Structure formats: structure tokens, C-alpha cells
Image (cartoon, rainbow, N blue to C red; front, side):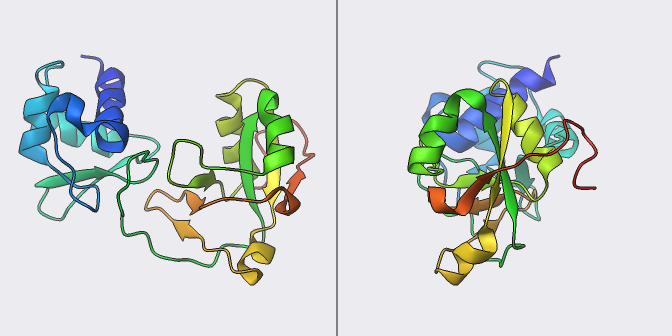
Length: 187
């Protein structure tokens, strides 16, 4: 059984297109587990144990259950309007954003925009940002002057899986990060 493929399908349903599986999300992004299982099982073999395994073993911690495990939601990354009840949190003075080299001209002109998502996603360390950037080609990392942004009234959130979120990052708060090409920086 390909849990990665099922997890990707869950991500599509819980973050972008719940209707493809006949699932309804409430205003906070929660889906009924039984309804989700019924919808997903039309395409992939799944039961509650498999769903729990996917949630437990997902290295990016994409999903959360409610306390009773009767509801599930994606922690962040939605393109549909939901309020996942993220707490407003003061970020560290510097955060990081990893991207592919092909996007740098646009970023340096427009800043970071959420595009199809509700928020811009930022990392707390350069290593994670580099890994994110590698998914988009040759990685480029930007430092984000998040402390300065807070002083200018920008709001930051932190998802349960540690991703930092904000509505946008104007280019004046971005600097290309010139670190050694290593997985050890920032540690």
C-alpha cells in the first residue's frame, strides 16, 4: 500500500478540494473522519488505522486529529478559506524562506506573496528553508526581517507543525542568505 500517495490525496482534500471526495470542511478546516474515510476509500483502500498511521508518521506533521479522533484537518497550506485557529505569535528576529532560483526575480520585485495559499510559509532555520527550496530546483534562501515586520504591524502565526505564517513579506524585509552549502548551518 502506498501511504505517500494516500497522504497526497488527503492533502488535496483537506487543503484544497474537499469536494473531490464528497467531504465538507467546517469553518476551521475540520472534516469528519468517517466522511473522509468513505470519500477516500472510493479511490484508495483506507481505514481508520491507516489514516492514524499516516498522521502519526508524516514527517511534516501535515495533519491533526481532534482529541476524540472524530475530526481531522490539515495544519496549514490551505488554498480554501478556513480559519485553523492559529495563535498570533511573536517570531524570532529572523526567519527564512527557501525557494527555487527561477522565482528570485519575482520575489525581489514583489516580495513573498501567498499565491494560491492563504499565507506565506517561513522556516525557523536555514536548513529547513534549503530543503523547501530544493523542491523547486536550485535552492535560494532568503532571510526575513520578521522582527522589523512585527514593529511595522505585520502579524505572524505558527502552525502546530512549526511552520511560520504571515499574509505577505514585502521585498524590503528580504535579504539573500549566503551560507555555506551545507546541512549544518543554523545548528
